[in-house]
Image (cartoon, rainbow, N blue to C red; front, side):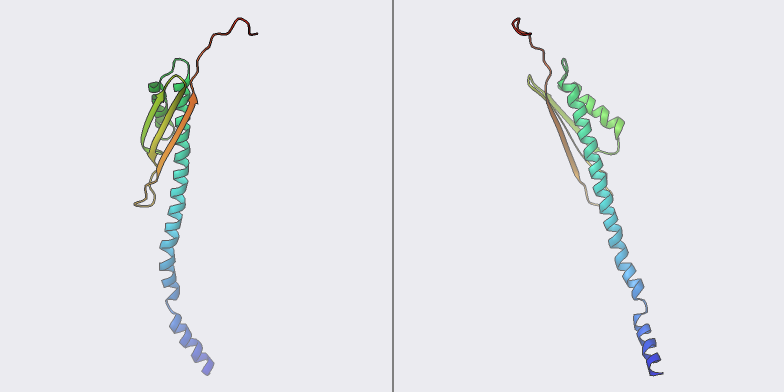
Length: 138
């Protein structure tokens, strides 16, 4: 009889502990899921930005290409491929006699309030040029 009273007293002392644990653990779990989603969006956006930079440098490096053509191609790629993936994109391009370079900057969409992850991707390549062939070479 005495053992049964102890069990009832312990049960009364523990009443509500599961609810308290759930209230504490649930926001932490949701925040962890939010961070995982935020990282996945950042990772995807950085790959889209890198692809846009590579696409732009292909246009800029081509024979007869220009920095403006590379910038326009990268901006078009971003608009078509992921208009909401890279937010606030800024594309800069340059070309000289030897190299062409395109850089894409922006940020990933935010899932976690107050967390804004930046993205920078650049691609550089030698420009195409034709050289005269010497008569003595095969």
